[in-house]
Image 1 (spheres, rainbow, N blue to C red):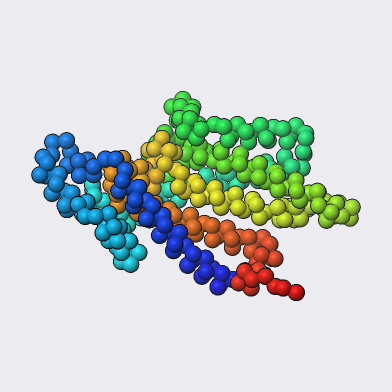
Image 2 (cartoon, rainbow, N blue to C red; image 1 turned 180 degrees about the vertical axis):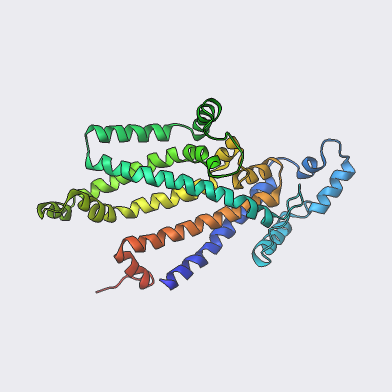
Length: 317
């Protein structure tokens, strides 16, 4: 298992390196002049030229790319924001906990509602419970999260005044954003849970367990759900990474200064170091999420754990 983890960590290096090169290239050739945004519309041509020189934008693309990769991956220096001159590492340390808090609460709501919903739908296939669950899933996938966020603010913040409309503070500030971000996740995970459970509950060993008089609750929780977990874990891991990198809209609507707003601000202001560092950091976190998913596979299925212990090699008889 340890060798497998080390191998996966090494495989993260080319992935993150590729993301870094791609983001650097896109920011280099995208329209807009950073020096004009920094100095404003009243800057003279001489001032703009001097700013480009100080930012290193007059150097060739490959020279700047090499310096960026050297500083990021060899010196572990993410640099400073061109606009605020604040260390990007300090900014990430400030913004990331808010995004992580929002993502974790969103995933708790998604998993806590979606898996029971999928189980009920699968165990009552073709009945009204199944139909209601699937209609809810279809509605959840169809509703844009930004529209739902605005409706929640109007109803629960403006009309009822139960929750604060925006900003940061205690846990109450994250309730509406988490609900807004979780609806689509609930729908997708519920559908996957239903599909996986339907495949399992038709298996012969489930029929045998019922014939032996095992209670339905025990069959569902101990036998069926446990064997249906692999695709469910995959969806949960993917959704966690997607929520972590896709909170930009929710953070913007609710005024939460997190990683999403941090990166969007960098894109709008052509603050290349901010966008590059943010993308690299999110790529690293997403890769770690996928590694955690693989480890959860091993916890859910002993056969996968045995394969990891052999270093991924198949045993030939």
